Amino acid sequence: MPEKNKTERIKRLMHRSGYRGFKEVDLILGGFAKAHATSLSTTELTEFEVLLEEKDHDIYDWITGAKQIPKEFDTQLFAKLCSFTPDILK
Image (spheres, one colour):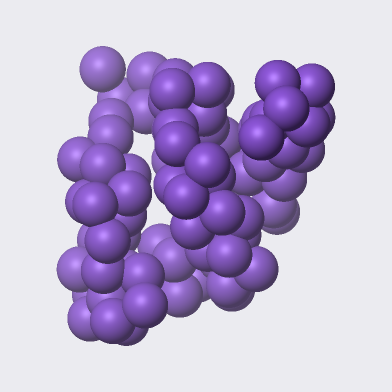
Protein backbone atom coordinates (compact mmCIF):
# COMPACT_ATOMS: atom_id res chain seq x y z
CA MET A 1 0.00 0.00 0.00
CA PRO A 2 1.44 3.40 -0.88
CA GLU A 3 2.42 5.37 2.23
CA LYS A 4 0.13 8.31 1.39
CA ASN A 5 -2.90 6.02 1.16
CA LYS A 6 -2.04 4.38 4.50
CA THR A 7 -1.61 7.78 6.13
CA GLU A 8 -5.02 8.88 4.86
CA ARG A 9 -6.63 5.66 6.12
CA ILE A 10 -5.07 6.18 9.53
CA LYS A 11 -6.33 9.78 9.71
CA ARG A 12 -9.86 8.61 8.84
CA LEU A 13 -9.69 5.79 11.39
CA MET A 14 -8.48 8.09 14.14
CA HIS A 15 -11.32 10.51 13.49
CA ARG A 16 -14.01 7.82 13.14
CA SER A 17 -12.85 5.99 16.24
CA GLY A 18 -12.69 9.07 18.46
CA TYR A 19 -15.99 10.75 17.56
CA ARG A 20 -18.64 8.06 17.65
CA GLY A 21 -21.11 9.50 20.16
CA PHE A 22 -20.72 6.94 22.97
CA LYS A 23 -18.07 8.50 25.19
CA GLU A 24 -16.71 5.25 26.64
CA VAL A 25 -16.22 3.79 23.18
CA ASP A 26 -14.75 7.09 21.94
CA LEU A 27 -12.12 6.88 24.68
CA ILE A 28 -11.30 3.23 24.04
CA LEU A 29 -11.33 3.19 20.23
CA GLY A 30 -9.97 6.71 19.83
CA GLY A 31 -7.21 6.13 22.36
CA PHE A 32 -6.33 2.80 20.77
CA ALA A 33 -6.19 4.38 17.33
CA LYS A 34 -3.92 7.19 18.54
CA ALA A 35 -1.62 4.75 20.32
CA HIS A 36 -1.48 1.97 17.71
CA ALA A 37 -2.82 2.98 14.28
CA THR A 38 0.56 3.79 12.77
CA SER A 39 1.94 0.39 13.76
CA LEU A 40 -1.00 -1.67 12.47
CA SER A 41 -0.53 -3.85 9.42
CA THR A 42 -2.71 -3.35 6.35
CA THR A 43 -4.78 -6.36 7.42
CA GLU A 44 -5.24 -4.94 10.91
CA LEU A 45 -6.25 -1.55 9.50
CA THR A 46 -8.91 -3.30 7.44
CA GLU A 47 -10.08 -5.27 10.50
CA PHE A 48 -10.32 -2.04 12.48
CA GLU A 49 -12.28 -0.33 9.67
CA VAL A 50 -14.74 -3.24 9.61
CA LEU A 51 -15.07 -3.12 13.40
CA LEU A 52 -15.92 0.58 13.23
CA GLU A 53 -19.00 -0.30 11.15
CA GLU A 54 -20.50 -2.08 14.18
CA LYS A 55 -22.76 -0.47 16.78
CA ASP A 56 -21.02 1.24 19.69
CA HIS A 57 -22.96 -0.67 22.33
CA ASP A 58 -22.05 -3.99 20.75
CA ILE A 59 -18.36 -3.07 20.62
CA TYR A 60 -18.48 -1.94 24.24
CA ASP A 61 -20.22 -5.15 25.34
CA TRP A 62 -17.63 -7.27 23.52
CA ILE A 63 -14.74 -5.37 25.09
CA THR A 64 -16.21 -5.56 28.60
CA GLY A 65 -17.22 -9.21 28.22
CA ALA A 66 -20.94 -8.50 28.61
CA LYS A 67 -21.49 -10.24 25.26
CA GLN A 68 -19.49 -12.90 23.49
CA ILE A 69 -17.24 -11.61 20.72
CA PRO A 70 -18.52 -12.75 17.32
CA LYS A 71 -16.16 -15.10 15.47
CA GLU A 72 -15.35 -12.54 12.79
CA PHE A 73 -14.04 -10.10 15.41
CA ASP A 74 -12.25 -12.62 17.63
CA THR A 75 -8.84 -11.65 16.26
CA GLN A 76 -5.43 -10.63 17.53
CA LEU A 77 -6.36 -7.02 16.79
CA PHE A 78 -9.44 -7.27 19.01
CA ALA A 79 -7.35 -8.90 21.75
CA LYS A 80 -4.97 -5.90 21.55
CA LEU A 81 -7.95 -3.58 21.76
CA CYS A 82 -9.35 -5.40 24.80
CA SER A 83 -6.02 -5.16 26.61
CA PHE A 84 -5.68 -1.44 25.84
CA THR A 85 -6.10 0.98 28.75
CA PRO A 86 -7.10 4.52 27.76
CA ASP A 87 -4.89 7.30 29.20
CA ILE A 88 -7.77 8.60 31.30
CA LEU A 89 -7.73 5.34 33.31
CA LYS A 90 -3.99 5.23 33.91
